[in-house]
Image 1 (cartoon, rainbow over the protein chains, first blue to last red):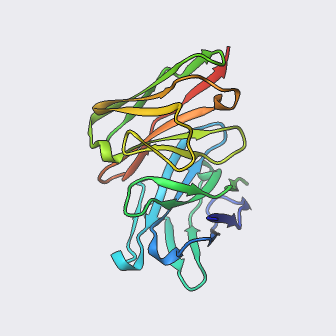
Image 2 (image 1 turned 90 degrees about the vertical axis):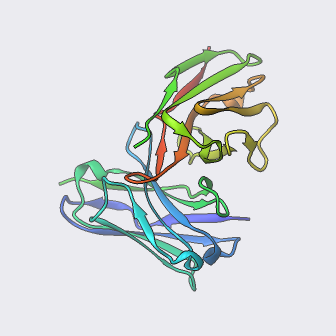
Length: 121
Length: 110
């Protein structure tokens, strides 16, 4: 059974940093691209960024709203994806979901339960 | 950047009725790159449809997707009580935002 479990969310002050993690199980993690999607309270879904599998270079892409502030990385030996968030703003407050991309397909076939990040002074 | 506009914003129907949800793109989208998700309160979204018309694993056949170009539709043939939720369409494209979502349609019990 595919499982994605996020951790590391919490309350952080504006301008500070936070790293959240996504621990995967039930599939060969290294074979898949992984994305982060967020949802502000009461709002819709917003794609944050993704990291390709090592077979496709392990490169990353980001939404314009987080580019230069957020960094996605992966540790295939541990089946973990990370989202490093720097220079956090109040508008980054959201539930952050870890998602698995379909096999070479542009959709999200599995989602974690999400972790809440609150940016507030 | 492609913008997806979903309509209606809220749809009020009764169990057993047919639901038709629309997703319109600001420019043409490859059908291969159009997906639909369902989200219930306090839950993560769930993939329903990918490639505009293919059902994801375990999705009942009362859910169907159709469309091409700029107009896509999610149809639920006979609503079950568990179908009342928010539905999002999503497309994959090029920069600046490789994935974009529609704003969602809330399907509520009438």
